[in-house]
Length: 197
Image 1 (cartoon, rainbow, N blue to C red):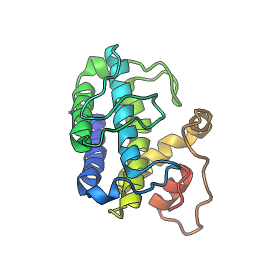
Image 2 (cartoon, rainbow, N blue to C red):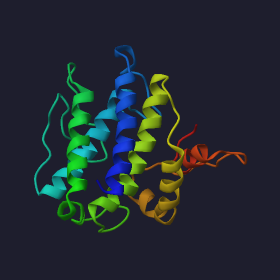
Image 3 (cartoon, rainbow, N blue to C red):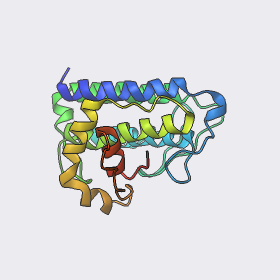
């Protein structure tokens, strides 16, 4: 497995652990993402994965496990009996398989905040941002473990710094908020991506 696939798997497994830890009464809890519930956060991550995988394979994303399809920055509709853990697990497994395939991992995505880069690079930077940020969002919404992997936080924050303006230009990311002077690495990263920890 490539280093990028390893890093992705670690972050995806942490997100999946927060999904499994979410109890039925917490799925409708409001999240730090304005207007989104905990359920919406997970559906958005699933939808984003499907969009990337579809672009790589030259296909159209398809609904599955009770989670519909929507534009990439949105949160798709979710059936009342949807299995969010199964839906994300399927996406995670497909993403790992894609990252392990050198020919697929090298395919350029057509655009995005990093520009036309190989999909593995986009997953390693923007994908890490999405997984780290939304792992925290889901944990905050549900009262779960908000601790993020410190090495992944530092690596992702550093990689994103040159692309901040491009991130904001997409309209999908909130402006940064000032971090406290004594902020630790996780707090500084969350403030950078517009969260208020």
